[in-house]
Length: 445
Ligand code: GAP
Image (cartoon, rainbow, N blue to C red):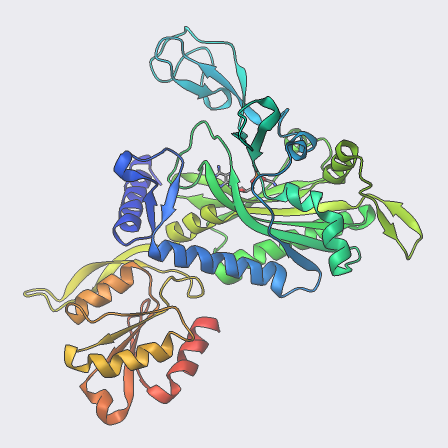
């Protein structure tokens, strides 16, 4: 996609997301704050549904993965042990003339400022991405703490607590969904690179000799998840295995699952073989024994870990990009048969509104609302009585509602409603008695 087209598409998408209540700039009334985003009513529903989908797939529907909900602020030694305090950052170069700060690896020529062309630059300096705060009333070095930069470290710190509480034996996993914070130098591409974001991570502990098998297993599971539930096809998703130079010194293997965003291919998720690095480091820094006692073989060792790590915000952005479409639909506008429509072809399981109930006339409102109250027990639903039916359909198309249920005058006689499919725009007459079964099959398969 050309740079112009990509820019136009991102502009259209971000404007739709703002207008329809998916994503807003945080504190926009004060000019916004770079790298921070709020989810509006539809964005919130969609993000929650996405997190639930991930949780069901990774935790609820498996008996060898358990959940954790840890704090955002941990003991600072967690970040010393993980290496984040000493080495988690980018090499930065400042322009002494225009004062712009640049990431060295993103500069075409690291002797020339890309902003003003000056060569009056500082030496490259390391810039740590951890966000600092203070715990307690004294603001000094001793009371400094950090907002977590990844959700997985508390999983390692709590490894034994979870293992003992759940009586899990190797191999087993611990998963967490939660906020992470990074003082990114260049937040960009809408929510793609933010300073506050939600991660969904799973750390799977196993024997070293089985670890490559588990690595392949989780790689396949994660690819399957994107294809089956989010509808990502091979032309928008690819695997980037890390080469020798990209691998961490302790890792046997790692890969990125990449998505084709309008602005180019970008990392969506990482599947990492972390060796026993994290648990070993926490053992070294805490003095606590992180070994696992293998009763079968009467041996003790520090388990090896396979990680799957993805951003919820980045997945949501990928889904929005993949779903945005423009086509034509019938219209009753004077002198026209067809009109352009914008439609979000969102996967049905995470659409913020799965079913909209639309009475054809205000006079039918009361009966239609009763139907809506019944439907919303099973599906994320909305009741809309305002405006022409055509305009209501357009609005539901723009928020990605897969099914619109129209309650009309015939409903009173035949106890049936018309169900309009967002994608095919076909309409089925369905009896109210059969409606839930019909929708359930269509939405949940
Ligand atoms: N525990 C491993 C870890 O955190 P990472 O590659 O730094 O690995 C994992 O991050 C995932 O978290 C990324 O693939 C991406 O989906 C998401 N992520 C990372 N930084 C992000 C940011 N600044 N904004 C939004 N999502 C981000």
